[in-house]
Image 1: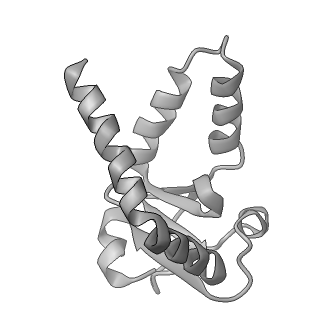
Image 2: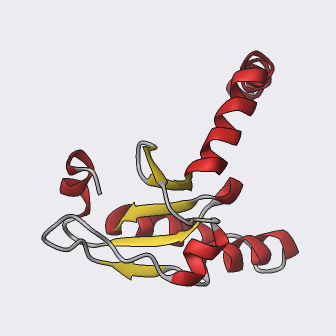
Length: 131
C-alpha cells in the first residue's frame, strides 16, 4: 500500500467487490457509512437486494501490516482478475484496486468517451439542481 494512503487505514479497513471489475478498499468509518446506505435500501426492491448482496457479501475486514501490506483474499483477487500487477487509485473516500490490464482498458475507454460522459453528467447535475 503506498505510504500516502496508509494513514487513513490505520484504524482498519474493509475490502469488497467494487463496480467495473475493481475492488474497493474503504477506511472502516467510510465502510460503515456505505453499509448503512445499502442497508437502508428497500428490501422489496430486487435491484436493491442484488446490489446489497454484491457489495456486502464477501467483504473482508483487513489490517495493514507494519510493511504497509494487506492480504488479498483469493476470491476477491479472482473477481478482479488480479494476477500480477495492481493499480491503486485514490477515489476521495475509498481506494480502488485494479488489475493493471483492466485499469488500462478503463482508462482508454474513458479517454475515448470523456466528452460524452462529461456532457451526460452535466445534464444529470442540471436535473438535480432543479428538483
